[in-house]
Image (cartoon, rainbow, N blue to C red; front, side):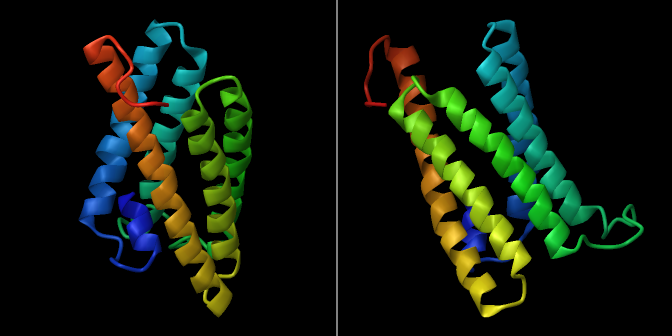
Amino acid sequence: ILLNIHNMGFFPISAVIIAMGIFYGGIAQVIVGVMEFKKGNTFGTVAFTSYGLFWISLVAIWILPDMGFAKGGASEPAFVAWYLILWGVFSFFMWIGTWGKSYVMQFVFGTLVLLFALLAAHNFSHGTEIGEVLGKIAGAVGIICGGSAFYLAMAELLEDVKGKKILPY
């Protein structure tokens, strides 16, 4: 949600987004993925570890050039677009994996596929007026996707804590 507030143009990339990307989006999701592995949940393992590592790699793409670890400097926007396309393809197959699961989970992964497509298009058209518009649309879709994922997490948490379904999902 925070990154997509940035994508809509409200705030620059800052320590807030970088810290959340490393620690909550990244490390915490990898830990949850390992926990899902222990439960025998292949989908949860792949989803949480993969997207956790996505966040860590995304932050690395942003900060490694400033730390002197990327010889060519910052990545070309078109190359970042290809990175996002690959994540979109991965997300498409994860979305297929949600079929038969909750509608909210299907919605989360479906909007994630759309988000990666929009972000890739935004990067391909970097520096143009259409690129700016695509970035803002991607931000709105990302907020919806992230908000839906947040809702799903809370619905599942409350069901586990209360022993019954509190929020529909």
